[in-house]
Each structure stands twice: as C-alpha cells, then as structure tokens.
Length: 283
Image 1 (spheres, one colour):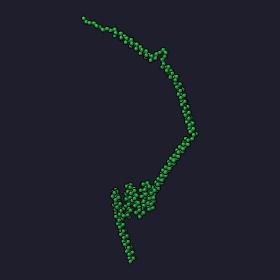
Image 2 (cartoon, helix red, strand yellow):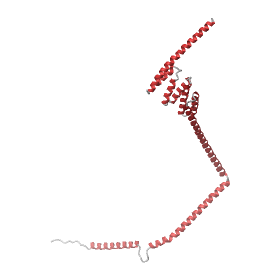
Image 3 (spheres, helix red, strand yellow):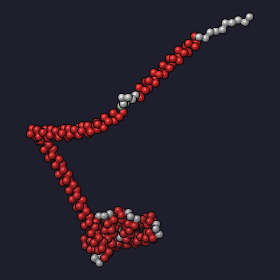
Image 4 (cartoon, helix red, strand yellow):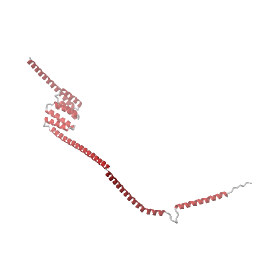
C-alpha cells in the first residue's frame, strides 16, 4: 500500500513538474514577444511605449534577461544612470550564461565610470572579464578605471597633505603668538626690563630734543641771514628826511581843501547879508 502511494506521489510530482515547465516556457515566449515589440518601439524613438513594454516583459518571466538588459541600455542612453544600473544588475543576477553576465557587468562598470566611482568600476570590469576574458574593450576600460582611481587617490592624498600642513602651520603660528604673549607678560613684570624700557624711552626723547634743538638753531640762523635783507627793504620803503610821505601829502591836501572851503563859505555869507530888497512903490 505504501509503495503504491509513493509511486502515485512520484507520478504527480513529475506531472506537476512538466506542467510548471510548460507554463514557464509559455511565459518566457510571451515575455520574448513583448520584448520584440519594445525593441521596435525603441527603434522608432518611442521611449515611453518601449519602457512600458519592457516592464511588461519583465513581469511576465524572470527568465527573460534581454528585457531588463535592453531597458538598462535605454535608460543609459537617456543618461538615467541610476535606473540603468538597477536593470543591468537585474540582468546579471538572472543570467545563467556567461556572455550575458559579461555584458551586464561591463555596462555596470560603465555606469560607475559615469558617476566617477572608479573603485567600483574596477570591480565590475573584473567580474565582466571573469565571464569573458577575451573582450579587449572591457580590458581597456579596466585599465582606464585603474588609472583614474590612482589619480583620484593621489589628488586626495595631496589635498589631505595640504590640509594637514595648513593645520600644522596654523598650530605653529598660534604657538608662536602664545609664546610671544608670554614673553611680553614676563618682560612687563620685570623691573629691570621696565627700567630699560624707561631708559630707552628717555634716550629716544633726548635724541628727539637734540634733533628739535638742531632744527631750531638752523631755523634761527636762517632767520638771521634773512633779517638784513628785510631791513634793507624797510629802509627803501621809509621816506627820506627832505621828502614828504604819501600820508603827509594827503593830510596837507585835505587841510588846504578845508581852508578853501571855509574861505568860500565866508565869502558866500557876506554876499547874502549885503543884498537888500527893493521896497519902492509905483506912484
């Protein structure tokens, strides 16, 4: 009885396996047909319909690696690199054949290069070469990614070194300023230093006074040299003993005019008093 049941179960499992396989084949065929439609849409520059059909094809079968791979290429050409990477990764994980894996990882490396993630690009290209060591394009991209990664690390090291050097210079500068401040505080509290500063200040003042005195003496000598010349000019301007000054002449003229005016007024007054009015009558 047990053997019959076991045999029956084995037959049921085989039938179910055959049915499942047929369903997968049917789904794969439908997915492939939709992928062809999406390819035509993309060839006609109808990206929207192509995207919709690729998504339909992906949902129909998880064995169709062409649909996510082609959709990834469509996103890549549109510079939607994040979406492209997700579809390339999906194709690489679903693929069981090395050529498909190689293409998927190669394009993943290209996305990393676009994003300047050179370390990740190196690893993606290496994985692509593991699935197809003969691809020269992948090998070239790998070499380029390594060179850019090396250059990027050197630039980062230079930036870090410069930053560290700037910090060290700033630290040394702060330390020097602090030490200078401490020395000033120590010198300020030392009586000897204060006395020396006082003497230096007095010495400086003495030197300044000497310079001022020398300057004053020089100015006095210059004034003495100038004075005779100024005296000569004043003597030339003074009137001679037998010669009247302009002011004296002016005063004399005014006095003469006043005398003439008085005399004229007296004469006019006499003329008025001497005139008599006629008081004759006509008879």
